[in-house]
Image: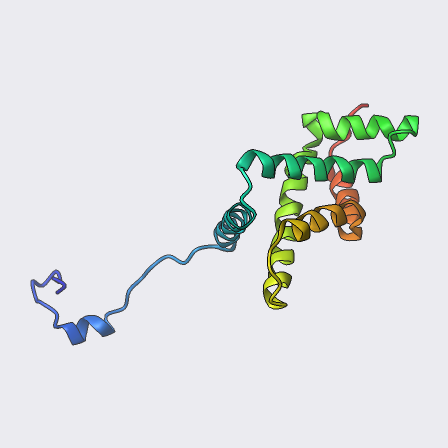
Length: 151
C-alpha cells in the first residue's frame, strides 16, 4: 500500500496503475554492463584468468601495432614504440574501447550462428584483429585528432 500526502491509502488495483518514474539507464551504462558481461562470459567459458585475458589483449594490441608500423622500418618503428609506450598518445585506451566493441560484435555473431565459444575461436578472433580494416581506419582517425606530440 502507498500512503499519499492526503493520508489516503491506495488499493492494490490503484497501485498497479500508479505511474512509476524510474530513471532509464543511458546507452553508455548499458554498453558498459554488456562489455562486463562479455568479459565474464569469456573468462568463464574459456576458463581464463583475468591476467591471461589481459595478456591476450595486450599481445593483440602489440601485434596490431606491428602490422601497422613495421618495426624493421626505422621511421615506423619510432611510431610503434611511441604508441605502445607513451601515455600521451593514449593508444591503449583507444585500443581497449575498440576491442570491446569488436569483441561484442564477434560474440553476437557467434550467438546468432549458434557457434560455441572456444579457445580456438577466441584466438582466431584475436589474430584477425591484426589485419582488421575497420581498426586501421579507426586508428588513423584517432591519431589525426590527437594534438601534435613531438617524437
